[in-house]
Amino acid sequence: MHKILVFLLCAILSVPAYAVSLINDTETEKLLTELVSPLAGAADIPDGRLRVHIINSDDFNAFVMGGEDVYVYTGLLKQIKNPSALQAVIAHEMGHTLGGHMTQMSSRMAAEMTRTMLIQALGIGLMAAGGDPSLGAGVLAGSGGVATQSMLAFTRDEERIADDMGVKLMLQAGLNPNGFIDVFRQMQEMTGVLESRINPNRINHPLTAERLNNVRAQIDRHDKSHQYPNEPSDTQNAEYELVRAKLIGYLDSFDNVMTRYPNSDTSDAALYARAIARMGIGNLDSARVGTNTLISRNPDNPYYYELLGDIEYQMGNYDASVRAYENALARDDNAPQIETALGLVLTERRADGDTDRAIELCKRAILAAPAPLTYWVLARAYDDGRADWARAEYYHMLGDTDNARKYARRAQKSLDPKSPEYIKAGDILE
Image (tube, rainbow, N blue to C red; front, side, top):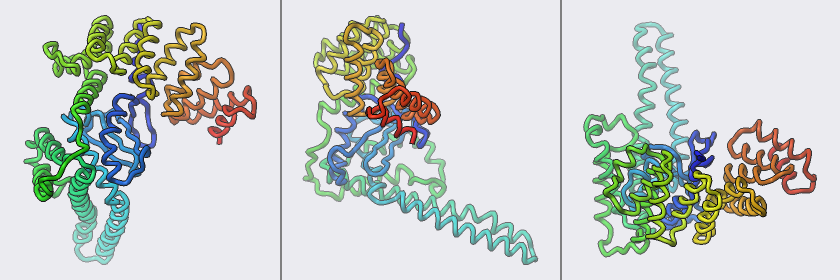
């Protein structure tokens, strides 16, 4: 039995620059892009420039980098109960970007560092001048605390501003700002008891109760006749439940999945989560039964066929796996991860024409969304120097410079210097 889950197969990878792990999944990324697109439009981000990334972490968090890259944590997706609330979280993070808070933070930190050094210099001067040495020591000891309190106050102000800008962004995007209320209510449920014991001046966020009151007041001030033409549709709400179930099924323990989605729950989301969880513990027959039930209910959903392809692959049923993935691609022809999964099975089955088809699929997937796994599958499909080039690209994307350069050098020894792969290998070496 194959132990590889195609959803996570080399798709959880280390990103050295941010010390996080990213998950690639077409279903989740497409839905999140749809949900965030109205906010991107309101923030004047050009069409097609916004990129959504999924971080494998149980943290209740998200952030925006560079204005066009949105990073959403799986912990947030698993816990946020509706897509409108998720949009509010992203709107808040975009509020930081629009407010230029990262630049301001850097400037403020530099200013506080200068002030701390001056205070420390004063403390040293007092100690050197004689008299009561405890006076200078006290100044030194307090210098760090002054900077810390100043920075905490500064970040609390920024959080308030980001909340305000987020509400305005939701309204401009035609989205319901009550998503903010949903988020803060949920945060209160999670941390309310703890927050009652916290000194509000010693944390970098305002207390949740304060934030909830602030956004309520701002929402109450806007025109009550305001329409929300872009708020999530019933279809998107249902798809969001499926995405949550998928992540929980893959990432939580089997017992936790069964607690959240007991057998008595016959919804599509529950069937999805249980089928994935059962696949994870090797109960493939039951996983296949559940997946086929989903397909019978929703014959046009490409991602149920994708799951069936995963299951059949793990059972060693290559022909059935190929049929399932082909059915998925017939219903969604822009699915790089599914193309890569199909390419992987073809490189293992190796019937006539399979390796050529795998190469074609991987090239398409790389054009749409380059990923380490795709290069790894491509290396399996090639039987010449291009395999070494593909391995070089694989290691390059993983940040393994030594192996990337090793395979790039090997590739150039056997490739035509005029070939694209030779040139790309040279790019890695440079």
